[in-house]
Length: 426
Image (cartoon, rainbow, N blue to C red; front, side):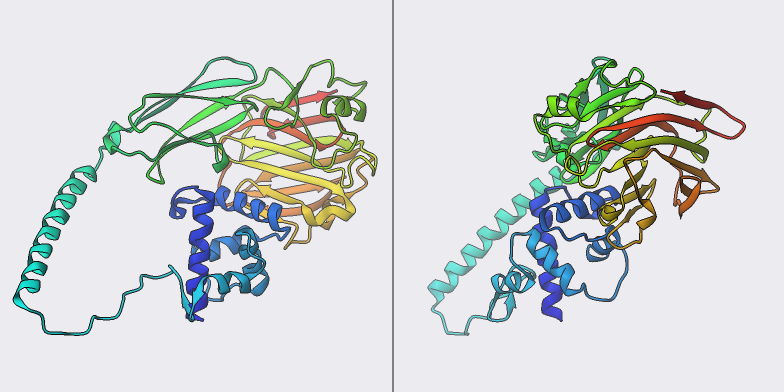
């Protein structure tokens, strides 16, 4: 079992090297959610955030991961199985690189004074070199005054896309490993000169982002980037640049949405699996208390089975730094969905989310409320989910509807009882 633990440690190290997300000791919940999604995308095996946290030692757990989990980790590293991974990293039963290996002592033999003197000179020279390196390292690793670290952001416009100018100063670190990360997503990370002062980055989508300044794999400072919309903005996902829809294109008779014909015209494909259309209204909502609110909406996905197998629709309520994401989907697809509760990810792989399956061709009334730190979700006036939030969302800074393929939103209403009300009938 000790060798298996060493192999697991090596597997972790290789995954960290492959991801290049920085020191795993500072990984947060978002990082493990992203890792869970990447493992699923590559292996089609869903490892929950809690499982990954146990493997990385974030949660105390004595049991060793099961075979299915180990196989998924190995496949993520392009091995066929955990057995294949083990065979590649064991030589004569010893795990390679997992622990420091000390060679056997050299046999004691008598040496003449001349070779012995040569060893003394070599040892003295080595001590001088090590001493110089230690001196240089001690200067280099001198504690840095946090006040000397500068990191701020400035938008160049109030539209999309939007370039952001980051002003930064980490020269006191004398480091060549400096990165600016746009948001929680480690894939949005770019290396910048350690002695630089400015860096610009393009944001193609609206939202409330926490940009990170990372030096030597550690987050040294954060700054918020708030990319707003002017009312509702329609966006068709497309790599590397999304397609923006005009106000006229997303306005229907009694609904906000788009039809299949428009998506096919914009995307060039008649099949919309994993093709997402978003309708975002990113702004402040004064008077809405993120600890006590209700959000009610009526929506449907208008895809045919041949256009989108699961016909999923998501309601997202953005907070300044976190979010609530609620999916509804054709009944047979509930295994592939998950709920972001504002603090935690609840996966359909290891939770029964069958209540979120419905007939997506018909309008569905979806409602959620947050009160006394409990998130409650209702579908067609029936409560289908309840979860205790570990922390507040801060303040609400946006609403987003997302559809896998074409979809329609008939109405929404966001309110705090006894406070402000925001509602639209489309």
